[in-house]
Length: 251
Image (cartoon, rainbow, N blue to C red):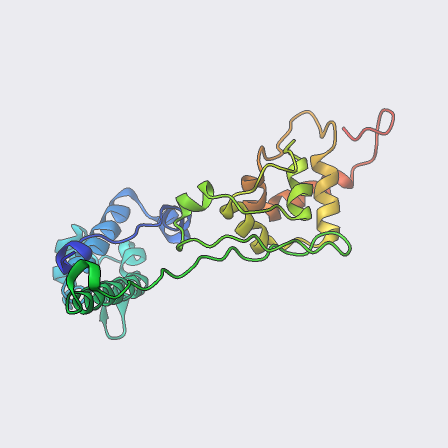
C-alpha cells in the first residue's frame, strides 16, 4: 500500500468525539469548523495547519479570531504552531506503522519475493484488563482475550472469554444468565468504575427491588448502568434512605 493510500484516512472515535464536553458546548457551525480543521491538518505534509489565523479561518469557514469561537481556536492553537495535539500523535503512530510495513515488504522482496520473504511482525495483542475485586474474597478472573487493539464498535461486539463472579452478580440484576458473556466494552467500563462492596450493596438493593416508586428510572442494561454509575449511586442511596411504607415496601 502506498503512503498516499495508507495516510488518506484517520481513525475517528465517535464515542470520544460525542462525549467531549467541548464538542457538546459547540454550535453547529463550530462543530463543522472543528471537523474541517481536523481533516485539513491530517492532509498536510507535516500534520500541521498554516500559521496564519486568517488562513485557518478560511479553511474552517469560520472567523477563528472572533472571541465567540474561542472554543474551536483552543483545540488547535499551541505554543509552537497550530495543530490538534491528539491528532498529531495519531498521525505519528500511523506513519510509523506504514514505514514499518514498508520496510518489512522491502526486506521480504530481497529474500526471494512473496514466498521467500521474512514474516511480518505479529500484531500487538489486545489484553482485556483485569476486572476489579468484588464481594469478600471474590477475585475475578482475567479474561483471556488476545486481539488487535479494538475500536469502540469492536469492543461492544467481542466477548470476554469468561465472566468473573462480579460480572455474573451485576448481570443478574438485569436477568442475565451467568453464562451470557460480557463484551469487552462492558468489562473495561467495570474496571473504570471499580465499585466497592458497599457501593455494590447499595446499588444491588435498588436494582433488585420489586418497586422503586411511581416512576422507574433504573437503567435497562449493564453498559448504561456502568457509564452512569455515579448518578445511579445517588439514586440508589436516596432510595435506601426512604422510610418503608405499606408493609415494608419502599414506595
